[in-house]
Image (cartoon, rainbow, N blue to C red):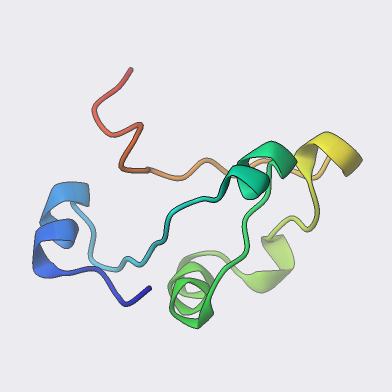
Length: 75
């Protein structure tokens, strides 16, 4: 998916952003696959060595929580 639009930047109060729909399989596996744009944004914020690999459920990898469209505004 391309970089955030100006409206998405405003909605998420973000200076950088990219995203895509999480598939049912990614949700089930508790992991995501990043495209090139998402990876570039992520690596601009979190050093690659600090990014957990694999499924939280399968190997206990650290969990990183992202601000998503679905959880925006929920407590």
